[in-house]
Image (cartoon, rainbow, N blue to C red; front, side):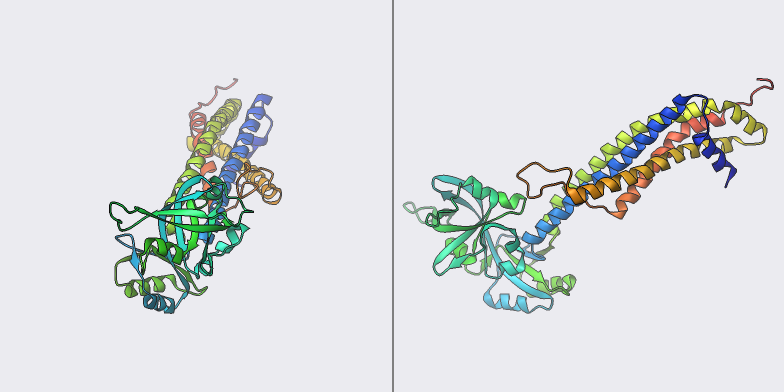
Length: 405
């Protein structure tokens, strides 16, 4: 073992002139342990929420979403739709027609988004898996049904046992009817199911048949977007290129995550801001390390003088106390990782920390990523080394004691 490492080890674990040094060193190590565990768990909780949201995106967001680059409506005829479904790599495609609407039920009114979908929609997305009440069905004969987001369902106070009373859907007409005509059109929509995504979709979306929405808007072949499901072995890049060639106008194509890119970016920013706050707390704990190292330096003044008389250079002395600080950091880091792993297993298995009622999950989700461990290890060791600089330099500047002292 290197002589510098040996001396650093003995200075940390050897006998001190006062128990106060051991106490402060122990408190510092404990602080680093808790700080390290906190950093890992903070990142893990955000990872967990990211996976939960990704699952929700998987349910509501298609693999690819095609929209007009400039403008509101994309014209897709039946023949063009058949050509789209022939593209190698596409498993299914669904025409979507969205518009803002006013919903009224037994005197309760709420504005939201009416999303018209065709019969392929439940094959393009996993909407069936999000149904928490009733069932997913859009029409039966001449009767049109609506599947509501859980929050808009509650706001309208829909009676689940009343199969007779419809929701009145009001939408602004695209063409004015003259001075005596109404500027809006209304049709009945019977509530048959409730879905829950855990996001904004629950608050504003009502799913209905594409024919129902088009019957109000009278847009014929015009749609808001085209939602596409890829085959398991489908090449997204190839499908994108084929769609751009096939469409007669300029389009934008977004994959599952690009459709909620802004939301994920905000969440990622929140994750690293929380990490930064926890790191600042760890920096405060580092002042205890400076105090502990400085007390060790004072305690070992005689040893420092002896080492210098034996030929140790200032850089060697500085290296000894830098490594003492690094050892404290390594011990706290190791214990912190062990503590974080124990708490991770407990949370994962037993959900010891729950979330407030009303959420779609019962306990805080948690997930570990290797890169997070790398970031935490670098952060903790960097703080330990920085905290060691001042005491180590002061130790190196200590002079040789006079004989007989």
